Length: 254
Image 1: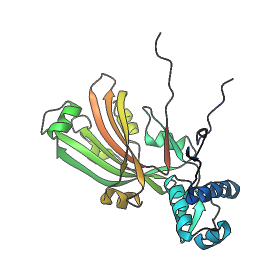
Image 2 (image 1 turned 90 degrees about the vertical axis):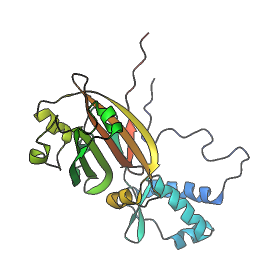
Image 3 (image 1 turned 45 degrees about the vertical axis):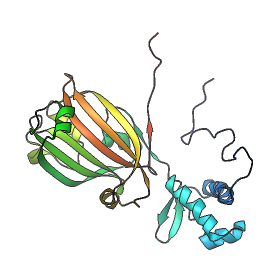
Image 4 (image 1 turned 60 degrees about the vertical axis):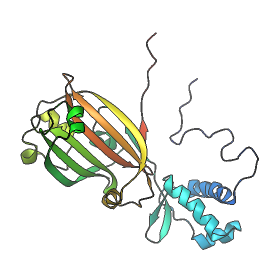
């Protein structure tokens, strides 16, 4: 029988216990807070740092370290001057679907805020990625991604002006770019994607509304149209505490 893997994944055999058997105090507090998080449920408010320190017999600095890790993992979030239990992470499929389709599938309301739509000459690197001449005009579309009005990412798209010449005139920035392409007879055929972990720059952190120290998931995507021609180059920064990615794998050919 195949058992489904829970969203958080199976626990490792030894979990947080190192081979020498000595567990740091903050980790013990963190483990107990994880039980409390399960009891409170999404939106539940945690006691203050002082209350938690007294309850567990540790210094406030120890509690603060445990809370910091849970915040970075997306288990908790700040609300006003307190800390509450966060909801489940947004699962985004690694496929040729738009951000709109991925978020809507989970019952969330997708949204985007336009930062800029500029016309730029292709530099040597981008010209090579999009198979255009150096200096050929490109659209650069930059938008903040939202889910239920919460800022969760920053998307930067480059596409040759020749492929969508009227983008500045008839594209609604809050809408799906892939939907716009389909409406104009341009269909995606394939894509190659690379994922890495990074820290946001000060500008990116300001736009997304996160601390600069929060880990981010950075996706680089190069999409081809149905004829195999390069169509777009996309750089998308997702909050590491709010997103996870899923991919369906098939068996290799015999």
